[in-house]
Picture 1 (cartoon, rainbow, N blue to C red):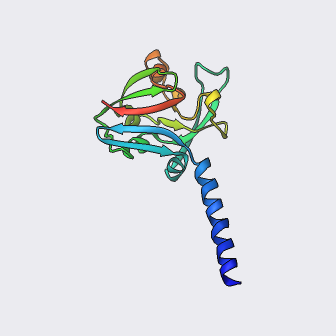
Picture 2: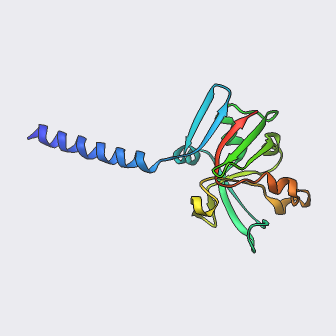
Picture 3: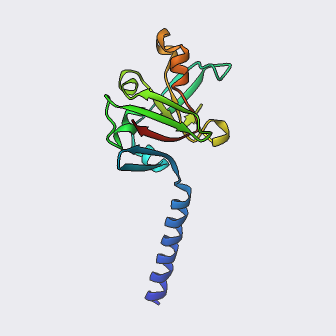
Length: 157
């Protein structure tokens, strides 16, 4: 009888673990030379999250953005403030960004807008967002172009 109970518990635990693994998908890949980090949603949830509300050119009204600071995400792959990164979106859009932006400004790797998870059809799974309303100097085409959505990879250059 004990063997049946133990076997049942192991099977149940194994099923729960497998189900959790299927929902914890890779949402971003970060490359730094030979270091390749596949970042899962659970990895991002372990980091301290922040939020701010800001206007953007992509929405008619102010939105609330939630997620970890970009600098904390970059440090997962040993990318430093003095490095440059290339961000590639799922649609192959690419932009070069000085990593120092992430240390100078409150830049978020957004995972939620208005407290709702980002989906691929809604600019997800990740989106780099600057707090444009925090400084007039951020409301420029240069910084807007450094805010790609549907990010697939971040690579140190």
